[in-house]
Length: 62
Image 1 (cartoon, rainbow, N blue to C red):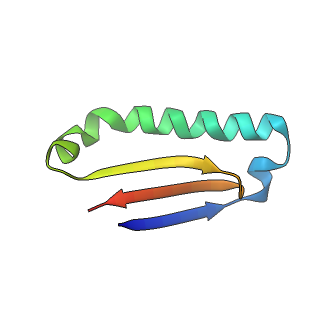
Image 2 (cartoon, rainbow, N blue to C red):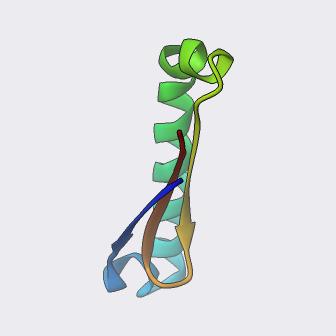
């Protein structure tokens, strides 16, 4: 398992920024779903989400 954290205090500086960060993450995941399907079928997976520390956390299961 690989963890990658990208912290940005700006992403949690206001309620608007929190919503925009979460929306960006969800849109990014949605854009990858078709391209990553073969990897998921092969047993590889990933997750990405906004966390309270002010950024993104990416988990890769290899």
